[in-house]
Image 1: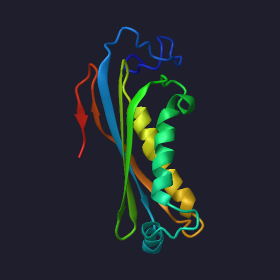
Image 2: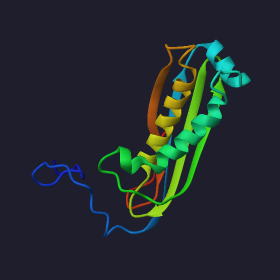
Image 3: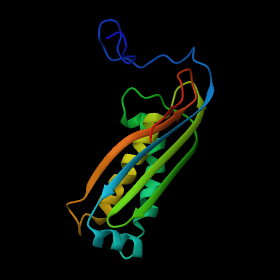
Length: 157
């Protein structure tokens, strides 16, 4: 298990000691999408979904989730986040594209916070319109960019 940082020499799960890492500006961006029927997307775009402003509520849910990541993912460090930006776009014929960008100045990265934000925003979209479209799919959750820290910057797409 030598290449995995969350395991000790005996293979036990551990929280990584980041105490000796440099404090740097760090950011990560994650994306996800919710695929639905075109009529469901029209409800979202028109603002006539019974539960209200779907994209606005999903944005707030994503921000809240990023701030709670260490409570959800057992070996994540609690981090002081300097920024969480959630962008949700309705894309015809039936997709909501989600992008979450998280920033901090610290000793460890924010990839998990960005992934958590994007996934909870997607789940919130699903929750708010599931009554009219149970066949929706949350798809393609991934980190698309990361910067800061010792390792090289990462960009996908």
